Every structure is written in structure tokens, then in C-alpha cells.
Amino acid sequence: MANAFTYAGYATAAWLFLIGLYGVVTSRHLVHLCLSLTVIQASTYVLFTVIGYRQGLPAPIFTDGIKPGAAAVDPVVQALMLTDIVVEATVVALLLAITVRIHRRAGTADPNSVNIMQG
Amino acid sequence: MHRPRLVLFFAGAMGFVCLFVFGFTPLRHPRDIRNRYAQQINTRTFAERNITDAVSAVNFDYRGFDTLGEEFILFVSVLGSLLLLRMEAERKEGILMDAAERSRDLGASDAMGLWILAMVAPKLVFGIYIVTHGQLTPGGGFQGGVILATAALIIYCGKGFPIFRKMLSHSAIEILEALGAGGFVAIGMLAFLWHRPFLTNVLPLGKAHELTSGGTIALISLATGLEVSAGFVLLLYAFLQETLTERGED
Amino acid sequence: MAILQLGVLALVVIAGTALVLTRDVRSQSIVLSLFGLILALMFMVFQAPDVALSQIVVGAVGLPLMVLLAIAKLRRDHQELEQEHKRKGRT
Image (cartoon, each protein chain N blue to C red):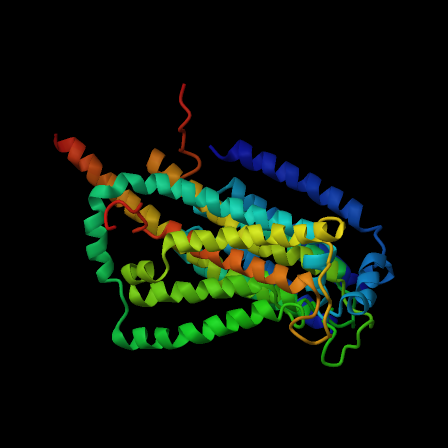
């Protein structure tokens, strides 16, 4: 059971990555493309979480009963993910701003029919 | 039209799956991996820094330099969005009057307006609580900053754009964001006064379980909260339809 | 409990697939909010409260908000472009 659980975590990350990439490849609207990128991001979060997790150990917050110095879940991985979530939201906002500009310039938001670079 | 692209994608996906399985099956079970760095941090955080939230300590002290980089990614993304949408808005001067007329209809009903006014204060207090207690319980600059930005957001949702603009002036928020980002660097440079490397924790560590524990961690958390909240409010400004340059109304 | 974690991972897979397979952009922002909440649930179950707090605020409120604002802007740009085309067609 424990082995299946580990591989479930890795398989989830791989599946999310592939389905997100499929969304990017077959997208017909630029905003849909940006949100498929969000799914690819989520796959990295799942992978980090599963790597840092130890069965039965508590969170790395040492108050309310968890004594300082006790064994806990990996805090380094959580620190990486926490800043990443907020920062990637602003990067997606930047991508959406680019989308709005492209739509203004080319009249459509379909990535297959946008051809601004001419000549 | 799509066929070659899809075929290429599936070929790549098959290759990815094969490599993934090949790479991950011989890995040891995570329970057997001795993650020494994490174990060291878990055992030392309280002893060395008087901090009970190990994640905040890692973010703002042990790996503070990486957080500085991430914060500047946020800063630059906000800057980029503002630039892109500002150029866009300059073309719409003629429609400014129209937009102001339209936005007057976007306000909420009286009941919702009252509820929103009632919610702004608790949200602000909650956001400040999360920012300042980052070193004791889950929280910190990043989470609290976004919560503070949502407090600004519901003002727009309830009262419409003109009141939002009057309450939060664009240049003041820009200054706050710059203060937050520069504050992080300035706190890091405090260490130079004691001839220590950049971002060393040089302030007194205080008692555990108190707001002043952790030295520079609390200050860096505050600066980050300021920057993140101001950045998100600026993003909101950039995306609103009526965000034109201060040419028409002022 | 390992079953809880397996269940949450299955939910994440379903929500992620649903997000990509939703083609209409306005519905997709609502599914994005749901996906953000399910990810936050996953972080809580895996003992990461800081990350869950961050994900709830950003992924359920911040990101769908910006997507909706971008879609509204796209729609208004579309209407203005159509008006310009009509004006150019007349003159």
C-alpha cells in the first residue's frame, strides 16, 4: 500500500504535466493556453509535496504540542512552493496582459490564426 | 491542420512517460531518504532563531536570497503588466466619458454596499494579523499581502471604480510597492554595519512566541507583505477597463 | 491515512483534466477556482499549512479574478473593433 501511494504521487505529477501540455498544444484561445500552463505548474507542486512528505509526521510548525526539535515534514520544499505560488500568479497576469495586446493587434485570440509578424 | 502537431505531441508524451517510469521506479521510498538538510533545519530553527514556524525561517533567513529573487520577479511582472496595459489605454481617450458613465451603473445595491463596508475592516485586520504573525504560525508576507489586496478588491466590487480610484491613489500605491521592495534590500544591507555578509540576521532575537522574535525575519516579512499587497492592487488597476492615464479626469 | 491522500490525489487529477478539457473560457475561470481549492485541500492533507494558505488566497480568488478581468477586456475590445470596422466600412 505504501509503495502504491508513492507511485501515485509521481503518476499524478506526470499526468498533470502531460494533460497541461496537451492543453497548450491543442488550445484554441490564448487564455485557455495560459490556464493550461497553470496545470503544468500544479504538477511541479504535487511532485514537491510528495517528495517532502513523510507518513505520520506533523507540519513543521513548532507550537501547540509539536515540540521544537521533533521530527516534522520537510520545510524547505514548502518554502519553495509558497513563494512560487504567489509569484506565478503575477506571471500569469503578465501573460494575460500580453494576450490582451495580441487580441487588440490581431483582432482574434486564436493562437492558430494570429500572424502578426509579416514580411 | 492539427494532425502533425498532435502526432508529434503523442510521440513526445510516450517518450516522456518511458523516461519518467525509467527514472522514478528505482528511486528509494521517501521514508528511506534521509533528508539531512531538512532535518537540520527542523532541529535548529527554534534553538538558533527563536522561531516556531520553520517555513518562514527558511524563506526569510536561511534562504532569504532566493526569496529576494522571487520578490523581484513579482515586481518586474507587475511592472510589465502595467506597461503593456498602459500603452493600450492611451488610445481610448475618446471613450473615457463613456466609461465613466457606464461605471456608475456597476455599483452594487445598497444592501451589498453595506455588507462590503462591514467586511473591509475585518479583512484588513486579518491580513495584518497574518503578515505580522508569520514567524509564529502559518503565515508571512506573501500570504498576508494577497489577503490585504483582496480587501482593496472588494471596495471596487461594491462601490464601483470612481470611489476605488479616490480611495487608493495610484502614485501612493506605487510608492508603497517600491518601499516594500527596497526595504527588503535595505534590511539585508543592515548586516554591512556589523561587517557581516548580506542578509545576515543581525537584530536581537527576542523571546520565543512573541511578535518580536526572529530578528530581521519579522521586518523582512513586513516589507514583503507591503510589496505583495501593493503589487496586486496595481495589477488590479492595470486590468480594469477604466484605467486610463491621468489625462481625462484629473 | 494513506487512503485520504490517495483520494485527494485522485481529485486533483480529475480537476486538472476538467480544467484543460473545458474549452469555453468563461467557464474555465470557475473551474480554475475549484482546481485551486482542491490543490489547497491537497496541501492541507499533506501537512503543508503555509502553502495551503497561499494557494487558497491566490488560486481561488486572485487568479480567477484576473482571468475574468482579462476576458471582460477582450470582449470590450472586440466590440470596439467591430464598431471601428463598421465606421471604416461606411466611409
